[in-house]
Amino acid sequence: MSRQQHDDELFEIKNFYYIGNYQQCINEAQKLRKPSTPEVAIQRDIFTYRSYMAQNKFLVVLDEIKPSSPEEIQPLRLLAEYLSSKQKRESIVAQIDQKLASNVESDTLALVAATIYVNQNNLETAYRVLHASESLEALAFIIDILLKIDRVDLARKKLKEMQEKDDDATLTQLAQAWVNNASGGEKLQDAYYIYQELVEKYGATPLLLNGQAVALLGQGKYEEAEAALQEALDKDANYPDTLINLIVLHKHTGKTPEIASRYLSQLKDAQPDHPYIRDLKQKESEFSRICKQYGPSVSTIPT
Image 1 (cartoon, one colour):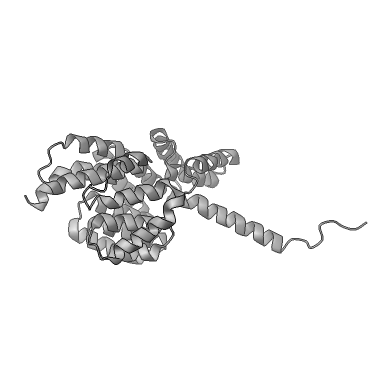
Image 2 (cartoon, rainbow, N blue to C red; image 1 turned 30 degrees about the vertical axis):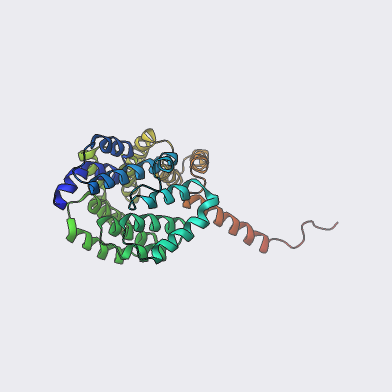
């Protein structure tokens, strides 16, 4: 069976995963009861397990992936353990290092390793791991990393590689929207249209609605951005990007600070280890340190 036929079988499953409709991805995977080849079955299961993890349902993955499961699926168990247990993270990073040192060629391992390294704030190693892969998803992940370090110029070059491989792919369209949002200016409207087209084709998801909201925020269209974010909030009240963008929105519009504080508290409760929260804690700690350093040496004025 050709690669094209494989992709046709998995199209809906992959597509719903990429746009952030994780439950629909799982539903579509369950419909594919008789995949044409073992390879298709493995890919179906990979996207199923990744969708469960995206919903923070780690126990499903830990229960179902056994030592006897296919080799290509095994890294997902490590990712589930890493995301669900802070105590195991150091040992899991060591295991990932060891697996990569064995030169194992696996797209799943590369994506899992890169995800873990990004969570460890080790972007350079994540980039290096992905650089060896030629998959569209690896290229999209590389673009995401480059945008995190404000290298929009390099992200544009990687985007051209994606467009040469498959210009119509949903992942390519999403990457184009990310780069447009990062570029700002007139590109913000182009980003909005990409997200809108995906919404019209496949339905609104928090991921797509947040992409729209970022494009609208950049253009100062706060009311429209708020509408998109409220819709995203209705779909998933704990989606971290929605809460972060609502915090940003309320800061820009100068609304009562209590509302922004409420969203921040909700984010801390739902995602206490989110990079935004970690960065905020670091900045608060640094600010306190500087205040103490430059504070008065005498706490009270002698009488």
